[in-house]
Image (cartoon, rainbow, N blue to C red; front, side, top):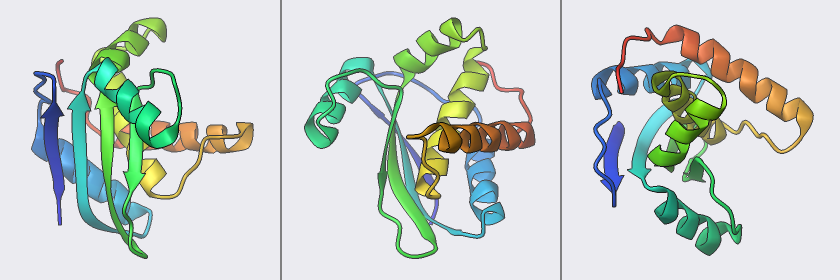
Length: 143
């Protein structure tokens, strides 16, 4: 069981994949779960829009979509990430690309861990968890 990295219709190289894999595994362990197979799929804005339309009936761009294949305490799933949207959001929120990418990766993992972000209370909890787990990650990646 592991974290796998893929590209779909985009050329993108995520630095320090082993470090990110270890971080994800540690977060899952800290949340009292076990890691299954997790696919991080980096893609373009339009590709993710098509997934959003086809599978979620949403007609808008987003930065991340998570498909949960968990079996009890074993965390597995596909996390699709629009690199273009993540980098656009970094500019909007005045964050560096590295921090925004880490936030989106952990956001997808938190969804696999059953955290929600539909209402105000859930969004606060999600943001607190993102901040906590980003602090665990030594920030020395360069995009």
